[in-house]
Image 1 (tube, helix red, strand yellow):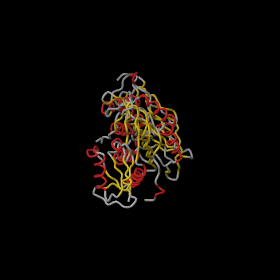
Image 2: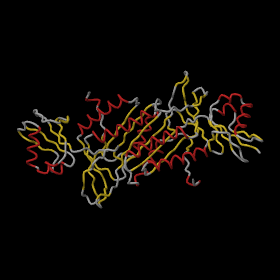
Image 3: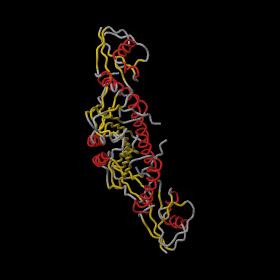
Image 4: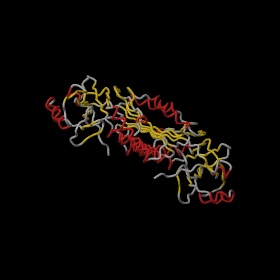
Length: 150
Length: 150
Length: 77
Length: 77
């Protein structure tokens, strides 16, 4: 693993819709691409024991997370014929209704883009050392738990 | 089927990245959403027998396409616990590198959003009466053929 | 009775139009027969037929005001 | 020898800090023992251990300058 090839994926605060469209727009010169698949994670205003989630505050073990993400990226490019892949995850405070995860895969044909995107999302949720603290509107908190979805 | 419930999905020309981000941004008040899945179809600059595709010109049998899309929409909402779904398809000229299909599904949890998005894309490709004419840079053309991808 | 025939995609290259009218046509088989006579390239073309937006797989009797659509393989997306 | 211990997520609520230093600690089992003594709530907490960013599942000897991380279940995305 070459240290300098490791990309940062973390963004402070929410991921804005215009960040997403700028990212999409940059691909119009990559004219071998026929399909993009995008996953966005959005913070839900869940109500837990009569308390309402106002925001999630994300923290990470950054060095370990970036190494793990690098490993996932290499494995996905090995497995699927992708043209490119971009991943962004929020750190710090993301309010309900805002976006905290942006996974973006592109390929000549749709199957690779769609399958790769889904696999990256699953691996991020399971393997990246990132923690979400659900902050309720009364400023109390609980730690988020990811469910495996099958 | 109520005639007035049928939505138009067609847009003249390419789908712009800012149209996509505006559509994403509108969902930040829907705070029950936890996951968005987006598929984008982009026109490839394919080279076929030494001729380069410059654009695809899309036509449709609009009344039939909108009825079929309505039927697909109802079936998908029946099958998956979605919060919402938006679909846009270009008509007319879309140049290589531009976007011609935008499928956008949102749900509380990722599995429904991801699976619904993929199924809608497959059904659109297989069932919507839409035709793409690949226009080469020398102005000759051939009719696009959708491959089934499995 | 006049029947409106609409064609799409590559069939417009064969018929050189996207729409035509046929008089006194009883059913979809007769539509195909008449069009094959006029446009021999149509014989080997692949398409489905829809009558009033519903695809049909068997010969179908046409009503006053019916629209018959010839639909080559779809290629949207 | 001083070992840097870093903790994350819900463990920061237990330890009331995200980082501490332990002196003369030989291996990861000793880290756990020492921390359990200091922070009894840690005994029932669920976490993995990583030494220098690599998760370990068995007792691991620590080197000079090693960083030990306590990682509760991930909840990113």
